[in-house]
Length: 280
Image (cartoon, rainbow, N blue to C red; front, side, top):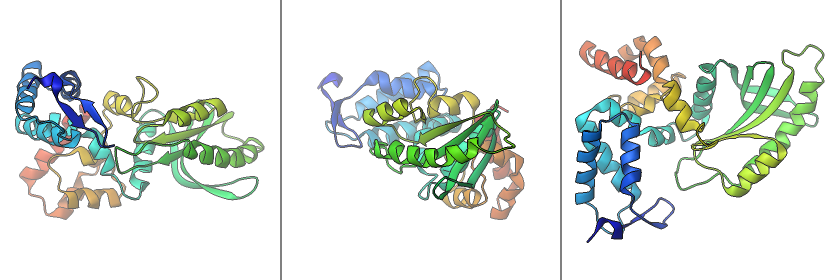
């Protein structure tokens, strides 16, 4: 059977035609060489069968890439690694705060703001260039769930409630305010249309085009610790509980690895992985 006749099953259950180019692009994005990508793609193609899930294709490509180079495998699993920040969503808020902090923002997580009607706990407050950004994060643990229009509708109502009191403060440390909605998956078209219409800044896995979460993370080398192929799940949970969300943070707090009874050799391998991901 020709490869072009293969249909695969997405996480939503939809059947789509298998794209060799899409697989190649995702592997190249990890930093793998052209020859390495070609070899992995060929192996994956040889094992395809009609109806195979995108998750199984990912798992096979990931396993092959990990055998070649663990750092490339870490970058390849970025999307899955962000899901692993769950299930509460709080580590995702810390992750977004970290990305903004290393982009020049002053950030605070979980601050209470008094609105005109009621008080609100804000996921992230980020200030830069005289603008206070009031950011609400919507975390999904499944790739098949999109951020519907209900989310920006709800968040816009909260933002409007806190906006007036913020702008009426006598001694402000900012000139303007902006409301944000951030999600780790994707927005529906209605959500994009509504959010744009009311002036919210929308940030998702692939939106804005060319400056979505994926591009920002790769460009700034701000990977979550959950991308690591060397840390165990228990070790990742331990670090997340101590607000170590970014690989860059683990490098600065490497003493935490001693709590696991990690051998010096393994500790050095983990730190080497972290530094390679961060390009340090």
